[in-house]
Image 1 (cartoon, rainbow, N blue to C red):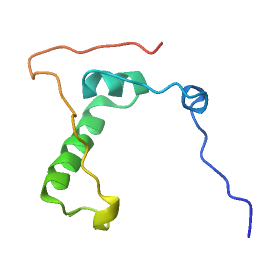
Image 2: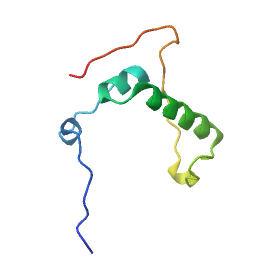
Image 3: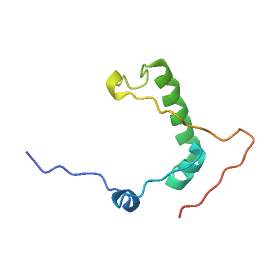
Image 4: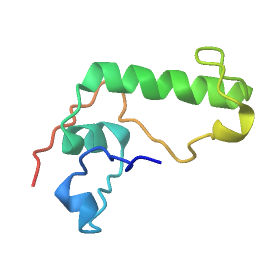
Length: 84
């Protein structure tokens, strides 16, 4: 067997410092991810998880877990943050 190579890990994760946010938009900003694409992905995943069926990728059910407690900012709010 060959040596397994892993993807690079953000130093804060490698050092055991998880990110925490009150709403998904804040977390997306902290992670430096593209806001609209990430929020669309989270919304779609949440929708499919509620159905219990992964219609997009046909993920087997035991690997398809709903994310509980994901909250979004109200549509008329402005959420912004900067990375520490």
